[in-house]
Length: 242
Image (cartoon, rainbow, N blue to C red; front, side, top):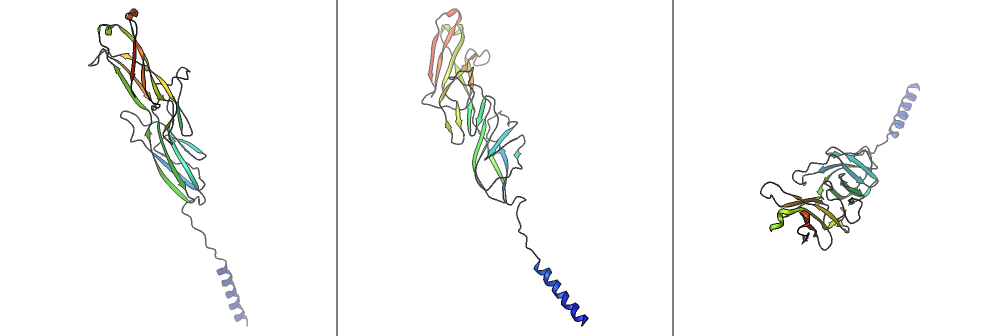
């Protein structure tokens, strides 16, 4: 009787152990309810002689982070959903709010903006985030600021008496929504003409400015050429560069 009773108890213990087994759910990431991103900036489209910016900024949803390396891999976790990923670099003379870049005013005048902002690069893309997923994203950086050089070649007997050329350019864009490629109202920029004193272009006058873009119906070079001792009287300078 004792041997038979021992065998029955072992059978009961085995049944209890089998009924206690639980199947765990397997996940692909340590964050099964969220998504995570890593953003690599591609600067290959920048102009010749322009360095890769030292820092750049990533914004997506409620997240904003800065980076100094090639890839930004934040610890931030994103809820599943649709997002706009915006990437840009801080640039002198330009402020960024959301996806709108604004060139600062020059000398606190509303009509004129800085004629030498820093090199701004931007990238925007739509991202769909799913739970339990890691994303490796590439931000192709687009150069938004361009350089413009204008050369004036004076002729005539009074060319050697020129002391300065005072001029400005109309139709410069003061703002840009880089998510939609939409420019704001037209502004003016001062054209800092200086005389070329050597080389093949000696005697000509040159001005170099940087522009976020152009906007409006026309871009006009407007100003005057001034001479030593006011002789002759200033010459009006006007040219349509549209």
